[in-house]
Image (cartoon, rainbow, N blue to C red; front, side, top):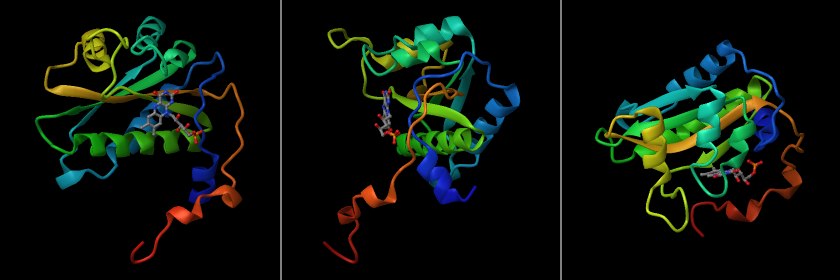
Length: 176
Ligand SMILES: Cc1cc2nc3c(=O)[nH]c(=O)nc-3n(C[C@H](O)[C@H](O)[C@H](O)COP(=O)(O)O)c2cc1C
């Protein structure tokens, strides 16, 4: 598939078939992330591949909204980074996560991002989603969670991007 078609095809998929994702496919997804660019080639990231149902259910409540779909996902990849190694770890981790979503699509899988950085477990409480997740997976103190990417065989279909609907007015040349 041409790269542009892959980009058009990737949509956020939050419903999945009740079917395990093969270990090799999960490995390919994380390998793609390991090839992402990072500032000063620092590669501050860590990836935790989760396919344990109980842990997925616990991850699904890392926020009040936006993470519930993980309960029905056969797998998820937690994207963390060592915040002591880089002051642009959020960019590095985000690019790696985007690579994973494209690799998942190329393997015929659906995926969706769950935002973790700057989010709280409950709106009213003090516990951050980051601290909650680090506690769940015994992550060291120097790591922070950027996001979780839910992955699985698609249980819903979404239309690919329509080029006719692109906001071309957001593109500027040389100046505004
Ligand atoms: C930084 C970022 C944070 C996101 N956070 C969430 C989230 O917490 N929960 C969720 O269900 N989707 C989340 N998404 C997915 C977006 O809602 C989705 O990409 C957007 O609506 C566009 O839809 P599309 O991916 O199908 O093109 C996030 C996406 C990005 C890039």
